[in-house]
Length: 351
Image (cartoon, rainbow, N blue to C red; front, side, top):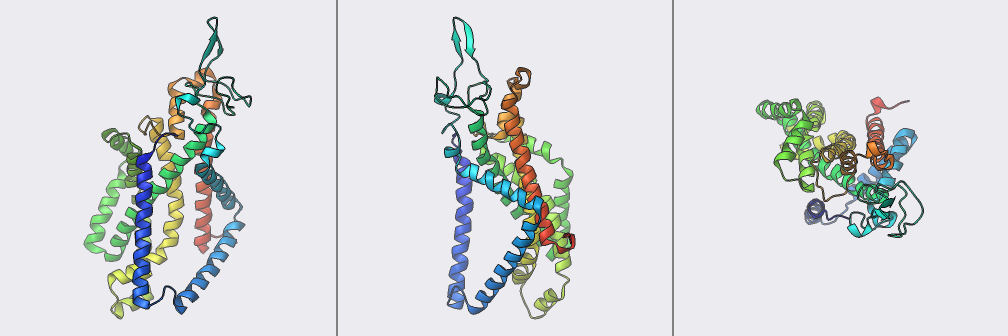
């Protein structure tokens, strides 16, 4: 598989930050309370587990949402075990390409090759989804392309949700000048067509996988900011917030202990839907030749098929698998997101 070192670095940085944050929180809790879990914490944990079981039961009752969850699990397994599920360990390495062969000047094997379960006489490999114009195995590319799509979906959404949540919390809670400035900034990004904006940014920046992730992340936060702000505006008028202010609780304490936890279900449900948008955005950029050419992705496969006349040649096996993978993955995330919205918002739940 192609080297995606920049994306791997991003993933390691994100994981490292989460680990460091967790260690700091645990250390502070032990030093403050003398134990990792107090009796009160155990009771809260028990209630949370009980609520989680109840939520899972309600989620499973939503057939479409649970079906989407199963499909997502399959794609995650594909991404993790790609070297074992693919027919070619390194599908983009030239040694695994099927070469065009001629006998007396007549083509007897010419790429793109149609699907076949018969081992090739040249490489000894099977090509269940055929090959592309270079002789690259399409099935293996589809399997490995899952990694790029999921990585972009999760990391870019993490960036987007982080920016949107911070801006929405600050605007909704502090109000006045902060709200005016932050919401005008949000409106500015909402008015801008986000696809053309991504194209401009990727044209200016280098075509690296890390920039694809960053561009998608920093152009998709406004909707989260708006949603979080509207929720905060209703929460900060509740009686428990007024009581916390009356006893002298700081803004940091109120936001961290009361406001943020009550907005998390909404943020979580929106996150799943944003992942689908991020995956589509990545495929969009790759299709227009603005992605990283060294990374195997479904969008780059479609771009290659379009540029090399797959439609004119009738090479449907080169077009349908990556296109179907994009549609199915986005649909799965959308189904899960809608199901979570029903689960986490009782007013929307079907009775």
